[in-house]
Image (cartoon, rainbow, N blue to C red; front, side):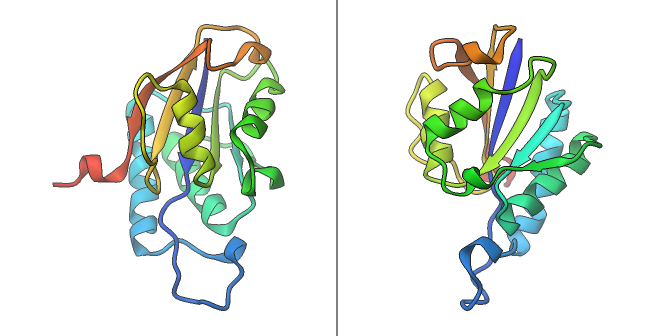
Length: 164
């Protein structure tokens, strides 16, 4: 079995309008939600073999929190194409993964994250919120076979699910 965990970056700050979009940091809510949601993945038993992130500061920082929460000790791989990716670009990236990897987290941006999660969902998701997570499982041994026909969205989590 192969598992892809798609994560939209945590909430970012608009406090410094002069910053380029790629340089925007997480805001206070993002700094709270990223470690908490990483912990939710750990509670599901996720033990990632690889983390891949867009080079955007907010995405990279979100990935660092998830790495810490899940016990991931490896390097976070930066993939510049994830900053402006289309769903098919991410599928191509997934299909090119090393078959020794079983669980991979990919951190990116909307609308691509929502579109990608919907490819594997049995019901329509209008929006993956910031720090939202889609856990997709596929009963395959070769990443080249990772397609909407082989994978299914098993968990959809987002921060407001856990607030009272």
